Length: 165
Image (tube, rainbow, N blue to C red; front, side, top):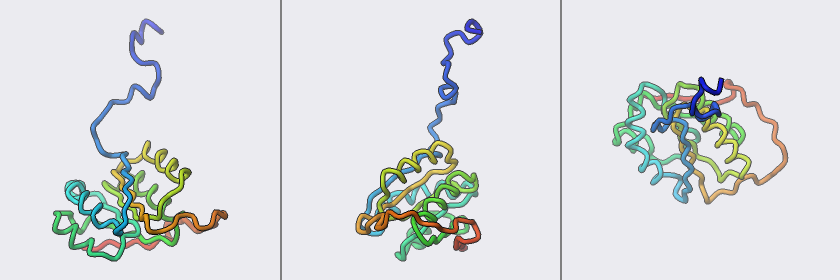
């Protein structure tokens, strides 16, 4: 068997091709302005990703003029899916599902700053993500005010999903 493998790497994780694709990459950005500047900086890439015919998912987008900003950047507005969640648990669940479903090309999530455990969770999600992700953490809000376990309904029916054209 050793002669058949020659000098090939023996760990299966090393056999995967190294691509320069951005899929599976999650950018974490800190913002003190509701993520307006961060969205402007990634808008050209979103425009390109929206041309793939898959969703550009916006999770908990703030109330600023993101529609106008994205339209001016050339993002296909018929490919925008707006998701509203009730809490951080649903927010992370929605982001995870959108990144790994294969129906999205980009996922942008607005959230309070995450703790180390939630950042680690996103690192694990990135390994199987099929979309590029941006997490915009609002540094003006406090994360995890209560560290008590929360029981929430994380079923897809409980999420408020909208698309607009």
